[in-house]
Length: 450
Image 1 (cartoon, rainbow, N blue to C red):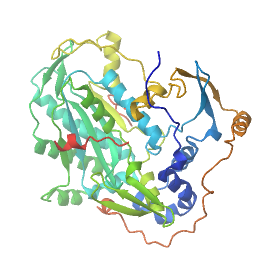
Image 2 (cartoon, helix red, strand yellow; image 1 turned 60 degrees about the horizontal axis):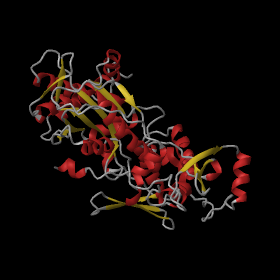
Image 3 (tube, rainbow, N blue to C red; image 1 turned 45 degrees about the vertical axis):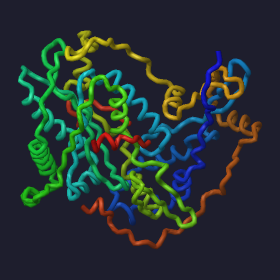
Image 4 (cartoon, rainbow, N blue to C red; image 1 turned 135 degrees about the vertical axis):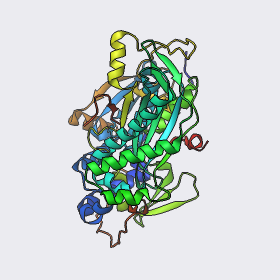
């Protein structure tokens, strides 16, 4: 039986505007970063160089590949290795996004109502988080503690516990540094030992905002980032700059909405489709999500903005709290109660699917089947991984692919004579009950605005 699917063609990141911009400007960018960009985009972190170097090798057959062959007709192609870098390589991050959405919905979230919250802070405080990324973890904790107080008071049961998955994002529409928390929160609390769940009434967002504001002020005061005088000044503002968004209730049966939202909260910081690299001018044009506005960046400033959103090695960008923490889930699994269906739902069963493979992720992202032979539509399989440099060279030379590039090598640039003004967007130890998931564009904005 043959399968019907669009033919899979291995990607060529070297052909994209994004790759060309990074390759052309990365070396001079590193040389002038401390003088030109550290004030607006944070201190240079050596890990950034490793991430970008790995990205420049992503999808390059010269760095190694797998051989994929059809069982029926013998047709074969080479599949290059990926860099597996998060938040900088669009392809690798998108695979992580899809895998995370599936895993979260299958293994963490329960079949009960949820809501989507967004907690944001005023522009005047954002710079502190840019220069001290450890504050991002504390910001996540502040959001959780604010929600926990409200949810436990809203449910009149003994020892109620909500569950939350909190993802910290640092980017805005035009890549300005804007730390904020996206939260998937149970719309109520669990209680008792048998998975009982009680839905909470609507929360009063103004009061919730006041608690969150107080916790952020206390956090920054404790770390010595702000003074009590500044707190009094900000507290006297008519519009504090703090904001909390609460989305509509998500039904426990709406699996597609839940998975899309799970992907959205760890989406990439930018979209390749919305950027255009003008090589002769040395600029990048980036369009807004609605397509109405656009902003032109000098190429190296674009790279500086991108690098400000790269997490440090091992930095935790997603955290789990309450009923969804790894500690709580581990205890339930040890007791054999983690698969208990909450009483609020009809018993639909709970079949655990296997973790998705590379081919499954490719199929879901690009709507093609990479293991269907383009010649005979038979089934293909990976037959070997080629990592030895000499073997790589021998194979690629035999196929006429060794050192074949359609573009000349990158030019050597003199540092541009440009005055960099501060961006408008900038002018302005894990807890025991917290566990983390270290990590393009999904059109979930209609949901946020609904």
